[in-house]
Length: 142
Image (cartoon, rainbow, N blue to C red; front, side):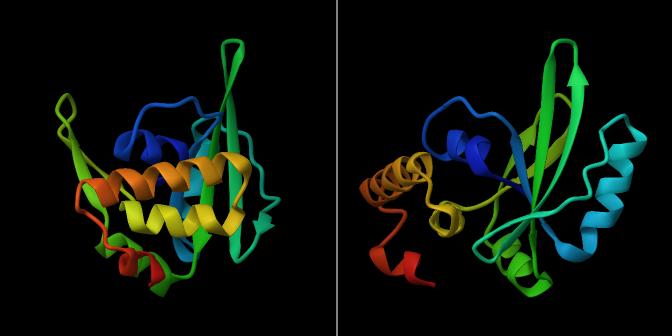
C-alpha cells in the first residue's frame, strides 16, 4: 500500500519526495524484499526504526539517480486494519489497482515521525479533508 509523500501528493497536492514509501506487514517484507533484490535493487537488510515503526530500505541506481524504496513494516493486525480503509486508483495503462493509504491513517503515520515536513503535511491533510467534509476530528483519534 502506497504511503508517505506520494500518498500525500494523491490526497492533497503534488510535492517533491526523495523516495517511494510502502506499508507492508512484517510477514510480507521478506518476499517483496527478495523480489526487489532479484531485480537489481541493493540489499539493505539493516532495518531502521522510529517510534513504533520499523523501516526496510532498498535502492537501485537508475542513470545518475538513485531510486529509494522504503517499506514501513507493520504488524499484521495494524496493516490489515489500515488496508481495509485504503483507497484505490486504477492505472488505466496497465489495468492495475494501486492501494493508497487513507488520509486519516496517513496522518497517524506522519505523527509517529513528526518531522517538520510531516507537520506541514499533517496540517494540510487535516485542513483539506475537514474542508471537504471527509473527516470529523474524531476520525483522527483511532
